[in-house]
Structures are given as structure tokens and as C-alpha cells.
Image (cartoon, rainbow, N blue to C red):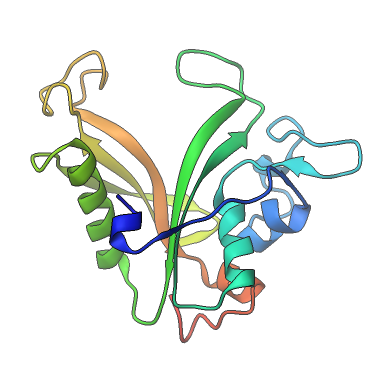
Length: 185
């Protein structure tokens, strides 16, 4: 779906430095994600990537905007396994950096993605949120493909399934890779 919308598929390392996994993503020094209780560290100070957002840093270092990439891959977090958590899981990250990009582009892209994946009847919902690497940030949900939004076991009776977090790339993230946030978003 993303390739048909002009995105290139990117991959990146699963073992990262502090710069890629945290600093360039605007994650402060004392943020809980940096804790050994949340992140897997090697004995030499590297970490297993905790989100595919690290790939956006690599991509922006390799190529200058305009840029459209989607980065599927494994990520690792020190979660106790249960029905909805696992220490290793797959995540997909999309990144679009160009002149004049706004939240309308992001919302339209996510809406088109779920409609192509689950059908034209699929609805989207966006809720304000916070992530250090996006500003503004939002959670994106889509109507349950099994019950059509009426509520069932799959969607825990809510009618919605969480797609994930999203937002506009934070200006500090763009600065970390030498992209001018006054020119690109």
C-alpha cells in the first residue's frame, strides 16, 4: 500500500547507538525508555532498537528531503509476555519529509492506508497524544474490521483497533540530522 503511494521501503540496524535510539529522536536523558528496565542493552553500551523510528534517522542522513520511506521491522522492549505484549514484535514506521507537509497529509495517508487494507467502509479516529519525537502527536485508531465498529471480542467491545502513535516529525529530530525545520516538515 505504501509503495503504491510513493514510499520506499527502508531497513536499518536492530542494534543501535544511543544517538539513533534516543538522542536524535529527542528522547531526554532521564526518559523511562532509556532505563535498562525498558530497553535491552549490550555489555558495550549499545541497545536493541526500541522502535523503528531509528530508521528515519538513518534515512534522513542518507538522503535529503523530499523523502518518503516506510520502515517495517523488529523492535525489542523489556515487556513481560502476555496476550498483548512481547519482548520482540514488529512495527511499521512511515516518514514523509517535504515542504508544506501538515497534519492533514498525515491523517489522509493513514486513512487511505486502512481503507486500502481493510475496505472503503473503514473509519479512522485520531486522539491527541505525546511522543518526544513528534509535535504535535496523536494516536490513530481504525474501526474494527470484524464487527464494523459495533463492538466485539477482537476490539474489546470498543469498535476501534489501535493503529499506533503518529505525528509531525519534531523540529529537534529534523535538526539532529541537519534538516532545517523552517523549510521542511
